[in-house]
Image (cartoon, rainbow, N blue to C red; front, top):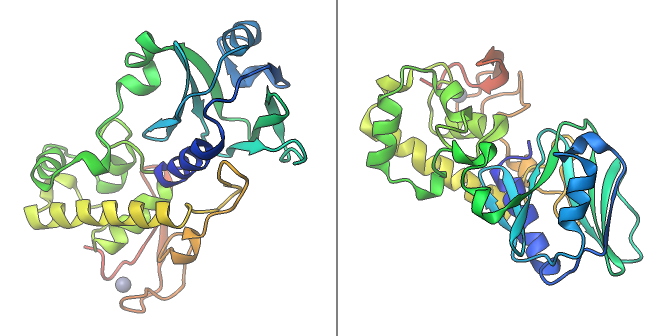
Length: 269
Ligand SMILES: [Zn+2]
């Protein structure tokens, strides 16, 4: 969290206001958030001009001419563009001064981080080099082969960024419910029809989540400080003990692959 739809929403909102803005200065209030160190980070940022925002998996990539700023939001990171009169979000730890406007990075839990990488080194960067394909770039045949060559449970596999880039706990649970597949089902046992249904559902859920501005659980907001609305459409995530929308069985909750998992014990097989 933020997952693909939230980072994509941040990317789209920043695309409206950030390109062409020059970084006059950077104020780093919490040194551990920047890599490799504050002096190098500030030196590489100052004087650069923001290009068109990009995204890979859950990583936001903000081009700065010959280099790019990578933003890893992890649990509670926020990146908000502020007009001169706007107040900073709570827990702001880093501020880019943009000739009146500002770009603020806030992070309640402080697990996120930012780094500026030369464009020629971007493809080999450790956080990008091992990312699996994005769900939108896959065909059913390809996904079926990927799934059936793995002897792992669906929940663990879909969370694995090297297998598939972009999904986290919310969208894995919502997708498996909609595809009527049990989170503990072994991937290698899926039929082609089930694999095709799962891919279609994952793509639909992500598209719908992007269209509604992402899910605001915890403290997620977009690049202009607005909350998303997809949490209102969650069918199982954080719905423990509430009736399944399909069969009325109470939604179950248990640890799967080390993560709290919501599913219907009756209609997910
Ligand atoms: Zn059910």
